[in-house]
Length: 235
Ligand SMILES: Nc1ncnc2c1ncn2[C@@H]1O[C@H](COP(=O)(O)OP(=O)(O)OP(=O)(O)O)[C@@H](O)[C@H]1O
Ligand SMILES: [Mg+2]
Image (cartoon, rainbow, N blue to C red; front, top):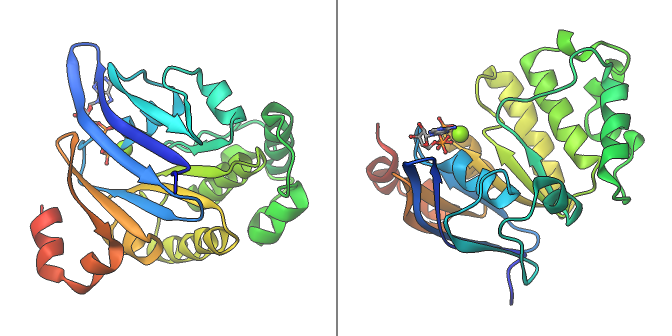
């Protein structure tokens, strides 16, 4: 079986500062895969390299069998990869509903995700649809960022640290909502520091350390083995 996304031995750098050292990973259709690792290990850089926001100095990014390495981000998005960045950028002056309609126009991909469908997944956003987005709470902005990306009808969702900085109760509802996306068959590549959050969602994990993959396997393995988890992720 060919993976939906294949990352093959990528090396990425910011100028002279080298960050990724031969990252390889695969994401199959319908899977939720998590990049797990502490601060600064290269999770965001890996995701940015997939999205075309950073061009790997070597290695390949393969999407449905096509080499997309070096494609511009908008072209990667149109090919079906949706990106939810860690900084939750929403158009602060626009209302929730306006943020969604702008995203739908920009995406030029049709499919099951309409404003009605995202409001069904995120009832809170429906309540807040006329609220100026700059006034939303962190959790609400995270929902809006995800909702906006869904409006592009991606086949693969790249989620960078969705739980970061959110209160535990907000994290629980986010977990529920992302879990629902997974149940609906959306393929997800998640980057997280939150072990609980990732292990609750992911089928498989890749644990990163200093720009390389230190461990990979089913998330159940890490769930059931606290000693392994501590060894891989202890601070
Ligand atoms: N724009 C940049 N210019 C230079 N170095 C950068 C830049 N962005 C990240 N780095 C460095 O690259 C390394 C990996 O960063 P990256 O953001 O990929 O880590 P991360 O795993 O996403 O961390 P976090 O959990 O804190 O988000 C770090 O050492 C970081 O300082
Ligand atoms: Mg990051």
